[in-house]
Image (tube, rainbow, N blue to C red; front, side):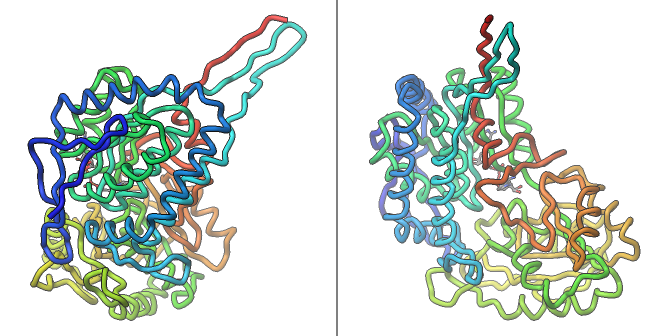
Length: 476
Ligand code: NAD
């Protein structure tokens, strides 16, 4: 078994203490990861601080060109990185493209695209006011050092979302991947360091304790966090203590609402992947589906047929479409929520029983007969289970969508886009998709409201969020 190392100031750095990364499809250890010490975290932040002024001083065109080189490195190493995603995170290799399984190759393709797009965006000087007496320009300045903390569900893609806009804007970065999926990310950062100056992107690794050292380091100027709400609250406190801003992309419990004029057959595939992409372990998955009585049976039937047709197994094998749940903690959570659904009167349409054997496999599960207030409806399952809830009146479905304290995404499904837009506008969520769910795009801002966090990523707004405005005010 190999040791995988952090990159600090362009150098490979190990640690006295290590832990093993586990393949969730087999339960086997696949590599050793360093547990960074507090001193190493401080060294990584110091390296990022030292590298930042020269990085920010480079001409914009040079930084853009280097970012395109980063995209090339990702492209060249796509097969290697995708295999790490599958072995460590569990999602099948799958393909790239709308008609193929959105698996590990799709994740690496996303890394490439989400590097090229910020590299091609400009942050022009804006003139806020001008008359005969004065001209006020708004310039965009990098914060300095960005501390980034990532989760385990889309480990490389989310790391890229945090790293790339930050460095594009002239910041430097110290990233801590999730302890469940460190190796792929450490390898990604090692590889992109081949084309970046030392110190621009650094990593530290270990559990939440290492993350807490990182986000509270006084050398950090901005925090980017993607993960759970409770951890987000701790990180917001740590950032507030040092008076640094934070972007928090937290959990959600996205509602999908079918309107009475929706076509269940035509929409089933979109709904299915909206709920089950990456085994439901995606922040903006549809996590509760509200269906009018008139469409209930055909919708449940269409989703059941799809769920039962998806081959599940070790994602390195050909033809596998669904992988395991990523870790034991998440697996246990899914098992418990399904058991609670059974006790609270839910009917299991398909799945609903742990499979046993090696790996954290759990069948795709549809549950009917639940209502708002039941645990599987109210708590984020973050797994391959979808409660389908019957409603009578669209007003009730809108109220249901809005009654929780989270608001990341939501979707409305209808044959009439105008009607769907009216409903969409009344839902409390950062994004409401119409006739699709979770379809993020590198040019379109993405972020949550309420307990799903604050700040946005992607597009021009995402790029602005890793900069601070500086006004230059000129007397004429
Ligand atoms: P988590 O909060 O348990 O862990 C996320 C990261 O935070 C890990 O790297 C972890 O080591 C680190 N961490 C833990 N405690 C810390 C602390 N006190 N200080 C600093 N770092 C700390 O989340 P997870 O289980 O990895 O991810 C699942 C959750 O993330 C779900 O709720 C999901 O909805 C959410 N998520 C949100 C988005 C989004 O964009 N909104 C995307 C993916 C996942």
